[in-house]
Length: 101
Image (cartoon, rainbow, N blue to C red; front, side, top):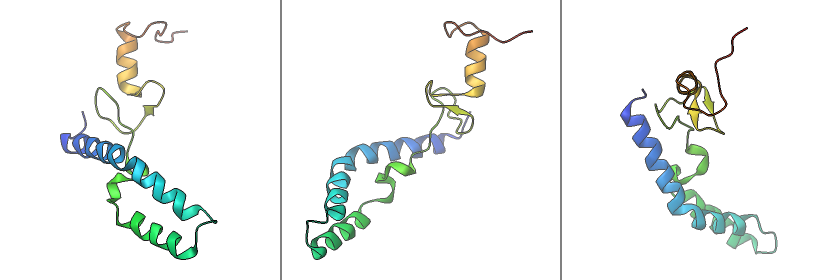
């Protein structure tokens, strides 16, 4: 089980990303639009830099839904390899069994 502080920090980041997503997208579009005057693009970049750091999508770290583990994460299932194996062993994932040969 991961530290509660790490899990909570990541949840806070996800909340901030959702809150600032539209504002960040609009500023990025304005900063990259070559039809807009250079001064306005520069001002858009300044405003983008003043947004909270944790509102950037790249600051979110993938974590297991069950344990909060950050490493060995399967994106498709949103689980870590360890949690996935435990669920598969108990037969809680349809069609998945432990390999034996």
